[in-house]
Amino acid sequence: MNYRFWVSLSEKSYLDYRENFNNKNHVTKYFGWLCNVIPEYEDTLAIPTTVYTRKGNLRPLIIPHKNFDHPFVKDYYEGISKKEAENRINNMLNTNNESP
Image (cartoon, rainbow, N blue to C red; front, side):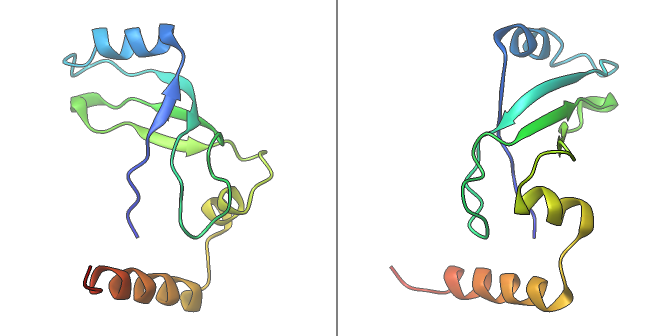
């Protein structure tokens, strides 16, 4: 499953990111707070993350802090079972096929 995450950065970090947005060689990292609700987990807002910019203007990598006690963080580092992955995929497909 592909999630598209948003994070909250400090003003200083945001301004640095914006200033270097078109710089293909700018590589740095920022502290950020996760700003997404992830359906499979409760209360995923404000999980601490590190945001890594990458060469070539690729989307930044957003990595949750390993020492933060949360089921999402645990699953990020330890993975989920095949059965759980299949359940999530089936739920996503069923949700996308429902008529309004």
